[in-house]
Length: 254
Image (cartoon, one colour):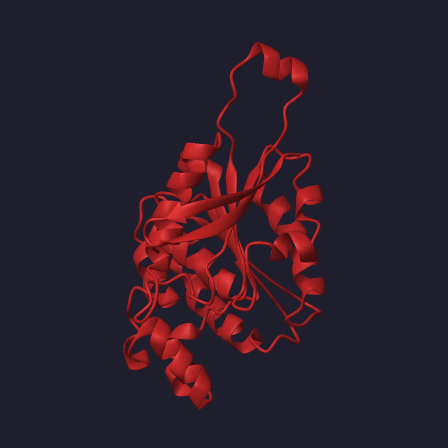
């Protein structure tokens, strides 16, 4: 499968950045006789301490999608929480608008809702649900693996340094609940959409985010989404995410 390391200038950030893209490869005879069709796309998001290389380095994602007609786009967003930062870059505009536009301009990716998916781990799990719930008209499904789905409640606990970093990201943390950065608020809005994204949420029973994930499960289950929750042995580690990204790909049915 073609694996492309793409360097490009991000207008929303005002800097050069990178993403990896995995593309399905057609048989030679097919390439010679028919135009390249637009392919379904999974936007695969990294966690807070990672970058655009991490899914390739810590899992076998390239092998897992080998027999699927699926492109995988893996961008870098630093420690932004996929948010237009109070003191920093406009990473929400970057991930939700510029990355899809650039990727579709460079590669044969479908812009149809039924062909677009988003998944991520930890901070990326938050980002995946945020993208799909904020734009249910764009995404057929989203998956959160050990996601930071309770970030809107972060003002209630945490050490000073962590609170300072999150304040630089979100601004006044007391205003997070009920805002466009609150996954509960976004889920309530998306529940009214004509087409709701399918949602998959999983977390290891030994993960430090397990209680946040259970609370979010209990919140979202009555809202009428096509929703799957999975919980199994594991912690906040790549052993868990490598196992569950395979389950996510099967669940996507691409």
